[in-house]
Length: 337
Image (cartoon, rainbow, N blue to C red; front, side, top):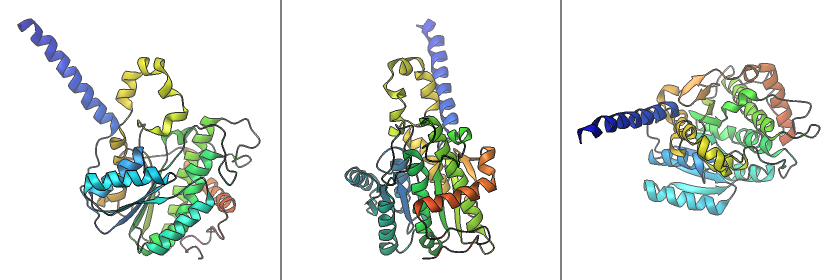
């Protein structure tokens, strides 16, 4: 019997070490214990994956949570599940299709009319490496949903966020933004052969550039009490990767399984950075930053290019039909109603 003790001890140590290493790589749980009773939170794409877990985490903390999703039936099911698990009855489902400018405007108008305050906006929804699809308005799908849709939504809700200050905007980007490039000559992939990976990277770079530029405009001369930050939540086991083929490959699952287990987060762990940016007291007033997990990091050099950010803002405002965007001399001034 004694001859088994050492091997079992070594095995136990190895397993325990692997679990600890996985927790370290995953970044761990949100360290903040802050609760948010009386605060209203909008989470886009919250019927599944990271968005659903983020909504759950914030519902546990007492917030009024609005799940904003394209599939209202699934959204209502997620809201019901979260209400049951948290016993927080202030969790509601709303229809929002980020691939439709009309839907975005209708959603924003309803929020402005019905909600007294919006304290936290989490732009979480995304598509990843889908085929060459286009949105209802003719935008390349990844640019349209991941970036342009959230750009319009955020701008339409800015006055409400300002009136609710201190308030926070959290934009989910990706580490993939480092491989991105903003091609102003062909943002919509109409001239080049479509590259689904490059399109995804461009959309996530646009999210960081938007975050930086919006922060500069909001902080302006007088400030607004609204902060905005971007984050990479980590690679998670969600439906986001359904177009990559990775989940359908038995070979990939077998050969890369141990690496995936170590590096790929559960949706619950991947929701911790969004939760942290939404509630942490130490982040009050912190704006225009990029986080990987729970730590602030420097983004890609192009994401720091102010000229690119300003040009992207102007082009985005034109594409989505904003009546007016901030000009370089108008930073910190409110959008006209």
